[in-house]
Image (cartoon, rainbow, N blue to C red; front, side, top):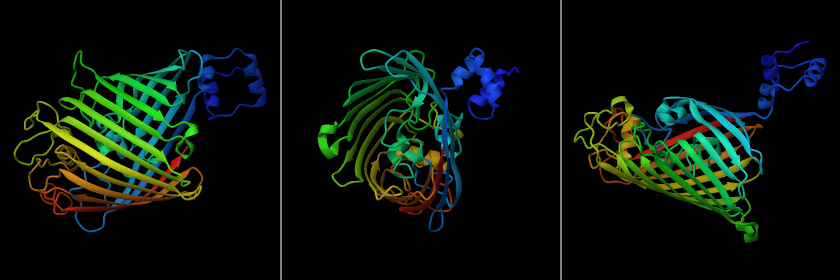
Length: 410
């Protein structure tokens, strides 16, 4: 019996079954390139859902952290993520790839929601020294304590630091581990964008990114596996050259199950507008050349601390405390709520303090189930920036969010 390559391909990824006789006949035939390629491919992903309640009335002006737009007082499909990948083989010339698609409300933070492509790159292994790895295409940004995948973070909601960090870059990334305790990643990309900017079409200007990782060796006792991170992004972004510095740490403690973390983000030269009066962002993205915008620079910084305690194999407690400031907070506030309130104006946000507590108990296999409470407090002096029933007319200094989160991993 002759089996076509389409059927073989479906069988290779488990979508159809072949009878034993057919399999034996197929094995006797020459191996097809399609079957050989698919045999090493893995499929993974997740479905992320949530239910959010904001106590009180008025949610027209929300706290401007990533993923908080349009999720108030309702059920949400945060993300459906599907990844196909082939890993590298160690110690030899090897090639692999990643093709990852993301759908749902979180996908709007990726490429300003223009495409469902989360990552798509070719992975190349070069047997030089301890092994050099190259990624060509679109890959997750290096910087940040938190991932774009909520399931990999200690809390369901994102931090303000994550809000200003780029989510992905398109370019060439090199990774090399000099020893077990030190590794370096460095890359060049078309653009460094922290708030969903657009490619400015520069002919010869590119962005650069890098991250140095130091990991405590086994000889350090309870600190083994702890890590320090330091990184930088520099290059064309949303309207100007952006400079971002990042420092982070994950520290194991003598108390079994207790881990501490910290992060610092500083972003300068963020494109910001000073039109004098509140305006609506045209198209949702501040673009150079659009009437009503100038090239003035904004600044942002965030300091966050994390605490994670694993109670047992199923239960854990996670907490985050964060302080953020800078006139650039007004940018994400305007992007999210649709009206830009200039820094220093009544209702503008330039300083914010946030506390987040998350309890996780995994009742089902492959399922993450979490309950989270978050409090955002206006620490600035320009009036209440949250709440209200009219966009651009906030009335509260505090924003409270209670969320239930359920994620299935496959």
